[in-house]
Length: 135
Image 1: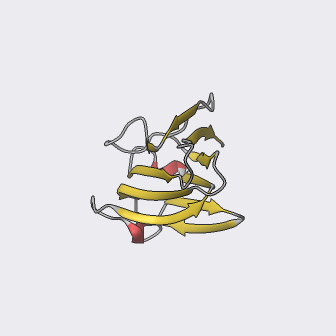
Image 2 (image 1 turned 90 degrees about the horizontal axis):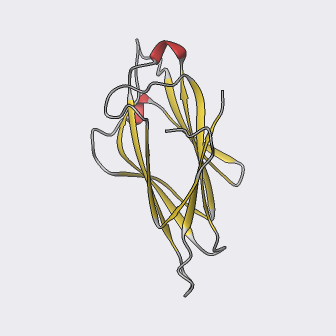
């Protein structure tokens, strides 16, 4: 899911998943992806195609955070979707998606996210995805 080089990708739709998908998530700690649109009026829909966050004795050791405009929404194992396309949030201009993976959960859980940008002007500007890695 994370790219330490912070490589920007430009397209209307972007997909992110762990490099080991569909097997268990291989990194520990946190990693984040920033979705931004160069058009101020654009919306970005953050959808989950597949989310199976690991649950060990109801502890939910993996957490997904979606942040926009300083407001953070938290998703945990109670939000697992079993391949049912689920819209988590639709935002204007920028969203940061962060996966926190407890060190004891490495190799477990999976996540596949789709972000779609909708531009309301005639320039058809694309959405940028910047993959970041945190620890």
